[in-house]
Image (tube, rainbow, N blue to C red):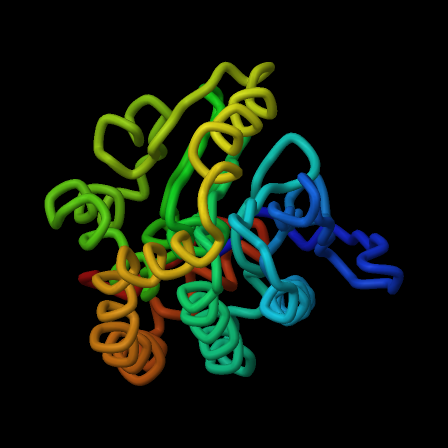
Length: 274
């Protein structure tokens, strides 16, 4: 879920106009660089998700890609999903679209590497969790703040325990705490941390060391093998979590109150005894 209203952005991608996502190929086509392109917030709303799906179409049809890099324009990776799209008349479609995108990211024909700077929250963090590896700027902050709005993050609830274990995942999900890049690395959530001003240089060195010299075929099969645990969580756990969110949480007054309070810029009025 997001913490700021949608920011607009339209960029060119492969010769056509695509809203909110930019795709380019680097290193002779071996690196597919996907950028969230709605700074400063890079809200993961329906338009952004559609744009990302279009970039995946192109990547899947492009031979020779050895790694997909997911990054973002502006000072922040993403403030999260659109809060407006978590209201009762939109939430079912929002969750379905996001969860379909995350599953599809797990079937890409190359390893995926997220590059995170600034705030990486809620739905933005869930998109990052669908990547194989994570590089973070030292000043980055990662969090699942949904609990502060009286809800929870279904995809993060499925993926975080697989990546970092039940204990650390529970702390993130139940408290809404914000982790620094160093804290996230200590937990195993982040794989590398770089000074903010060296983020791009660190990425390029990582590409030269561990991806560009490798076989695209080998990387494809290794990525598929490495993703099996996360993909099982998405297939086995996420449908039940999504159902709990839609049929149980959203049936409670508090399931909507936190979202409405945020949009109305007021303190939530939780139901008595909650």
